[in-house]
Image 1 (tube, protein in one colour):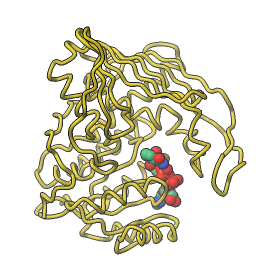
Image 2: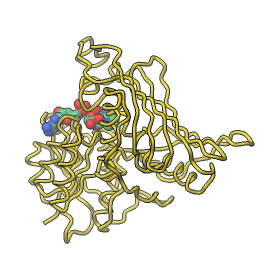
Image 3: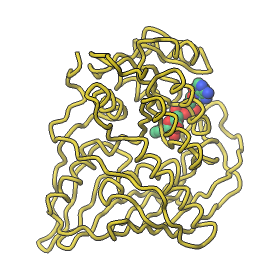
Image 4: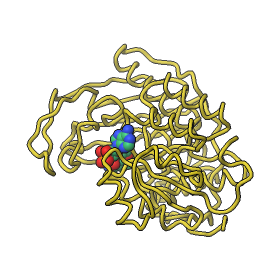
Length: 370
Ligand SMILES: NC(=O)c1ccc[n+]([C@@H]2O[C@H](COP(=O)([O-])OP(=O)(O)OC[C@H]3O[C@@H](n4cnc5c(N)ncnc54)[C@H](O)[C@@H]3O)[C@@H](O)[C@H]2O)c1
């Protein structure tokens, strides 16, 4: 029996992975009235206990203890990318729904395995990013769907930085399989592009790596050298099923830090807020000049997708940050690397039905399930 059947009221949540990003998640999840955060688990038990105490969560301990709590219906998986799928499969086997941090999986086969396991159990595997549910991208979607830039034609997206090894205390995983700029930051940009233009049909790309090793810049391991095993500069040309196109750069090889996300339409170009954030103004360039357009919608941050998932479970409707969307984004990323390696365009086999935009007054802080 699926975890949702017959249940009402707030949705019980457990968190696995008490590292850097658990701070933002636990702060937010414990503030959403529709969620009941009950347990924090980690292989580092002291870390799990410290995070539970810091955020007023009643229990902490091992993953097995968390999975034994019947009142937990959604498990938020904040582990490192290479164990995302294994942890998620254990969660599904325990009869619980999964919210996973990105990337959804590292390869197509394990992504498919996850979707099939969830389907077979009548459970859900929803995933980050949920930034696209924030006011920035939702307002961009509403503006474009309202026809304010005319027919949307092309997008340009840039994400350039020197890389996260200067500030993250354990940055090795960010330069290994499942990360690098494409897998680590790409999901924010590609999910936003899919939300605005629909599914991607084809990709051409180039991919390169500036250095074989990098050095940790902060924390107890500062000065330690680690291997870089994935491309650190990727540039791609995406063709969408709709006929629209996007050019994207994902780079950890640039001393210049820059993010840009713009959509050119027949009548105007809109500059969209950084899709790795939840809010920000839109800037519309048209024949009359440049206008700022405030974004509207929720300004809450990481974890709003968990609330949306909880409400979708109770309502029996599809969640917006779905596993199907995440699988399509994974397929795009894997295909981008393949296109870079083979220097040939790659056809994207998966597709996705884009879910409707959120209502402007959608509020994760409202108590709708109590
Ligand atoms: N750090 C950020 O700014 C950030 C932002 C957005 C998303 N993310 C994503 O969040 C995830 C976690 O990132 P982080 O920066 O918090 O990493 P982190 O290394 O700080 O934390 C990961 C935690 O998971 C635990 N863990 C690893 N394997 C486990 C297992 N099998 N069972 C239980 N616990 C396990 C580790 O002990 C650690 O405490 C990654 O997927 C990352 O892409 C991170």
